[in-house]
Length: 138
Image 1 (spheres, rainbow, N blue to C red):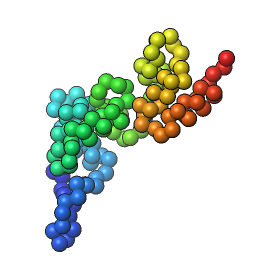
Image 2 (image 1 turned 60 degrees about the horizontal axis):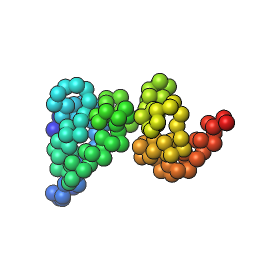
Image 3 (image 1 turned 180 degrees about the vertical axis):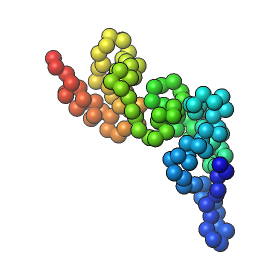
C-alpha cells in the first residue's frame, strides 16, 4: 500500500502525516518486516519512517521501539501494534523480574520506579511510592 502525502488543494507542502485505520497501518508496516518474523526491529521501523520522508528516522525508530517493546527483546511484536499492553500475570511477573537487580524475587521502590519509567509514564517516583505503600505487607 503506497503512502499518499497530504497536501492542500493549492499544492501546499507535505506535512508528513498520513491518516489510516489500524488495520491499514498493520498491513502497511508488514512490508518493512524484511525477515518475515512478525516483529518489527529498530532498523525495519527506521526504514518505515524513512519512507514517509520524516526527519530523524533513526532517532524516531529508537524511541518507538523503546516505547513499544513490551518484553524487552528489542522488537515491536504484533500484539503491541494496537497500542495496548496485554500481558498475563506470568508475563508481567517475568517483565518485572527484569528490573530486579539482585534477582531475589522482590522489587524495591527504586526498581519499581525504573519499571514505571520504562513504560514512559509520568510521575514515576510518585507512582512507585504509591505502589510500594499499597503492596508492602511488612
